[in-house]
Length: 566
Image 1 (cartoon, rainbow, N blue to C red):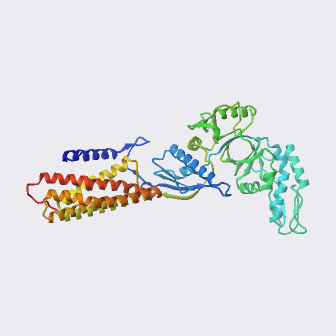
Image 2 (tube, one colour):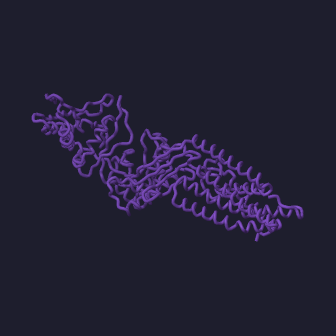
Image 3 (cartoon, rainbow, N blue to C red):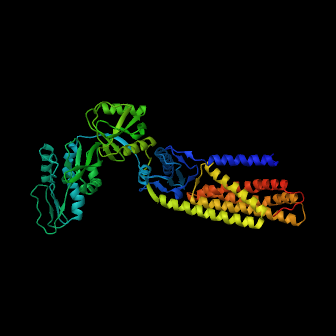
């Protein structure tokens, strides 16, 4: 089959047409015509991330960690597909690492946020907060004992001040505040570190006479009444102190049973300062993200101009949601994402299978779209941490492309000149065969959807060298046969047959090496291996088949008895 010159030419022409069609620009997601040859991270810029499961206390065993890695890989892949990155590279490397390469992205920080976001969603009822208020004096005493008495020579608890611009805060008129102040005045005396050192109560006339006294603001002094049920405000500058207090194990134990504290995600402007909301929530959620069936697309409320994300629950989730919200009509329901309260709307009616997540007033539509994206893709089974991050700017990628083209052009020109100068007519055949090789290689990369990287360009140049090497082996064997006095046609046939075993050995060993590199390598190494594999197959075909066809045409058209110029 394909033993005649005509059949060979038809086969070569068909392959060239297919590769040419594969290389034609295609319509991209935005409707613009894009190159069919995909460029890698190092050629067009982008981001490289390596992530691992965050398990600081080592609580996950090997099986649990392997399961978390597998589920995380699927979730990240779904998120990136939703994000719309063209041809991302997302793969598991080793036992505990996932590598994400996103080429050509315009907003690396947004992509990074989407990848690492846990997206653990909960719907929880906001509690009235009275139990928490009554527990505050005891919490203050714990703070003094845990922090003040251990670290300060003299501790003085300061009285909170009402900030300008927030007249509704800390009015002190309600009975809960009065009871709290009475308890604090009666109970906050404790012994200090020195023999005569005392810590006095929280009354406005608190003083300390010892030298070197220091001030310690209790949690009571940091929390300001917001005027909303179960919500307190904390000044942005006091948040680190409040978080330090709330991180104490004894303080967590003192929080009323069935309650938990969560920070709001958005700061609130108030006068010259800004504040963050601290919510008192029920610890048991009405619904979690595991009960979501779908989310999005994000939209904007025309009445209040706030973005929101519609969602739909599973049948099981709908029953849970309906039972929970029917008992709390008129209450606030906090929407908690990754332990931060996104918003706390009022439950106006019993909710069922369809509802919506209202974003805060300062949220953008893009943030709502990103939230819908990660909710559709699902939450990560475990938090992850980024252990390696690299960014390649578009200008650096353009420099790589320019330098790669220059190296490619220099290599091709040098090879062509040497082949034509040394082998003459046979050298011209080798040049034609190399041109076919380049089209087959690039068409193969485009047709298979492979990504061309900077190491891949090195693989192309190496493949060109191997194609030339195969031609050199053939030409030298033909020369030997001609020197032995054989006819040109016999010399060509014998030269190709004799060189075939050496060409197969050289290409096969290199092909095995490339496959191993592809199997066990990562990133640029895999890019090099892919290009090398396609290059080896193309170079073998052009050296054995295309060059042989050119010799057959040349021998048929030469004058009878004329020697071949090699």
